[in-house]
Length: 246
Length: 305
Figure (cartoon, each protein chain N blue to C red):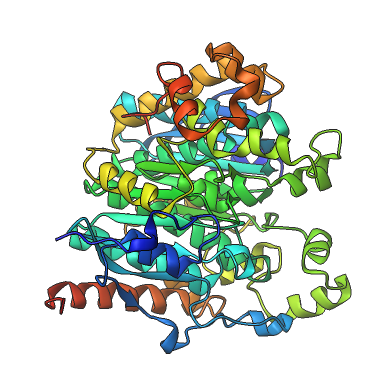
């Protein structure tokens, strides 16, 4: 689906949208859920300091408006922009800031839904889609942490070996199915059903705690994370009430 | 009562292991480890690649006293897989942060990481997202999360994004913060973009002095465990929030940085436009003289992080 197809499917009664380069921003009204803000990074573009700060500014403006309306974040990006300039300027702060304002928006009462419809990778994926309260994907989405040829270089394993291993374990290999099985993507939408109804269904779910590690355990792609995190928390709580012996 | 190990003053943070750092940082004898190596919670994924495991999966977590205050501590071991975050490693930190929120205890994270562990890339990537969310939830509850950066592996990739969510960052000259590492930039964009073998370029672009000058870190310390300890004690006294006012201030701070330094091609140009005296000398200066020249010139991120 093209971005225009997706927007038409999501907002059949129309959307007021602005496009500047690879950034989109707009506002629409949902038939039974009121207004919704739309933000996006499109065209498979990398996310550098300039892109991150522009998106973050829009999120802050939305929070300042105080309308508590949901935010839909469309994502089709590359990885973070790999450049000397961006690192010189402190890219980690810009990407973290973008993630932080998205998390703040949620804490301030805006539902945040990421819609991954193309690619996304590495730091850009963490700062955008993975900072949303709920992440959904279209079947065309193709998230990666690192592509297999690069991984072959770093791990010094032949690509044929990596491809064979990728078929038996979802934990390292690129692609949507693996990200679903490890719990990173909550739902995969169907292109055959109206997108507007699928969005309404997501917004109708109550917002809650981070459940991604539990999803990963239930789906068999990440069996240990939730159990380890729970065990650590339980030990910390228990030992807190015990007197220290020094 | 506060007691410090006698060798904490001279122990190099850069050279030390994760356990040595905790020993030197925390009041003597007060550390209580959670899920220690005796429980052998190793990565379930490394054997797929015929790689050795470590019984703590490269991170030590627990509770200790810092100047008699109870704190939760996590220390990454840069000598194991470059301190990279995998499923178990990440989940230990996530669990610690979730406990911090319930118990209202401050958290110290001793970063030493190359980022996501590629052999379990999806699990590592998601762990970073979960940790960042947990840090913000903890901070929203009024708890401090303090990052200490000065290890051999630096603070790269997703680790640098976690650092960006902390309420306060303490760094030494040897500490490096960057999303893409020098080798990654060179591999993807060519040696003309970044020559990873030019160590002076790496240090002045990503190193502790530059990060402290532009406001990417809050406290600059010598490469000594005692210096990190004293800075952490001071950081625990600061009041740091995470609300709209703070993040709006961060937005302005980061926009101002792009306006002021966005056209600079090298760190020395950045330092020059800050008005730093003899900026080319910065990399060679001892801490005391560096801090003197940085004072009143550096960008600070107080109440804007």
